[in-house]
Image 1 (tube, rainbow, N blue to C red):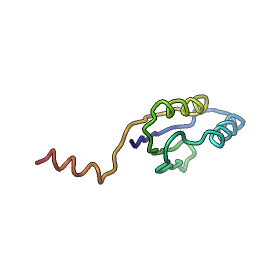
Image 2 (image 1 turned 45 degrees about the vertical axis):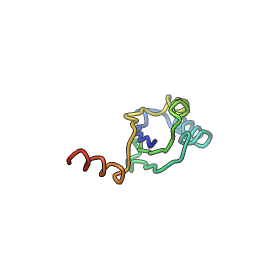
Image 3 (image 1 turned 90 degrees about the vertical axis):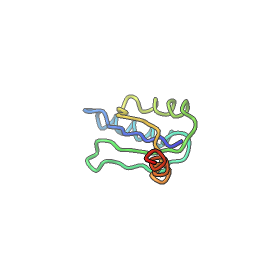
Image 4 (image 1 turned 60 degrees about the horizontal axis):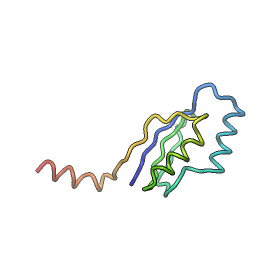
Length: 93
């Protein structure tokens, strides 16, 4: 299953806390499964990633590593447009 997550860096974290967050990222990465994409917002406020995983519990566990530093704005299952279009067309017919 593909899961897309948008996150923002908590406002007013210190440079030291930001360094801690980066150390956690080096240690724990983006979580279980395959990283499909990961974009960082050019203004430094956060980013969006998409992972391919079937392990929601491990995804939660990994997310907890970043709780002091990031706010998860949303995390939801998504499908590729190639998968979505046939479903939509079937619905429309």
